[in-house]
Image 1 (cartoon, helix red, strand yellow):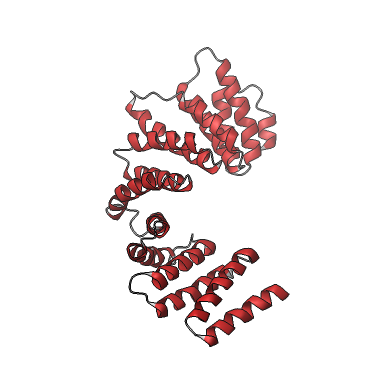
Image 2 (cartoon, rainbow, N blue to C red):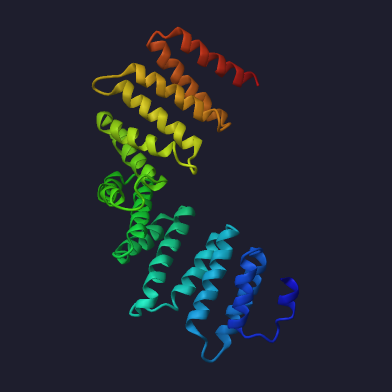
Length: 292
């Protein structure tokens, strides 16, 4: 591919984009180099092909995103966005897609204000694209939750859960994570009885997913167990079972500080419930970790 690029001096920018797209399949850094030159050449043309120039910036943005250069990716996605026209029906999906992509990248950078702006625009544009609308709304709920704007997060979750249930995303990781967010909202508000059914649905879906995080699953089990322990009609047996499940998952993370806190909480639970056997079992795990 490098040899082909080296002999491409006489190519137009739009022809060079093809080389960049080929390079993208195997070498993101080379793709970035080729596409940077391609868009530069097209920008210098008197009448550049609008769609090819947009495509060049999009693949350039994708290359930067794959290389985890999110600021550059945002820059190129924004430049690509300027070449699409809102009144052209052929461009409308790409305008929606780019608002979602830019919003998600800002979210990854923890720049919440622009993330909210772009994702809300994606929601507004996504009437005929239900899955994109759902993903944007779930992302907005997570961002507002991170910002401790719980009521705004709750409003998004209330609206999006029925949409998910009637979509192709029902039962997927997106559905599970939305239920987790709803469960945590109630947990955080000390509405433990209301949290329990959301945790139960979420865990059932989440543990079946190939994309699950053992850390997240472990923390969800911890929160669920706490709810069972402290809800109006406490279920100490099920709480104990789920505390043990939490430990099983969290041990897979290798995070000593997280495990130390989890072990302490679970030891305290089994001490309070006079389950000496299980208390000693967790204490042994704790001592072994400290001594390792």
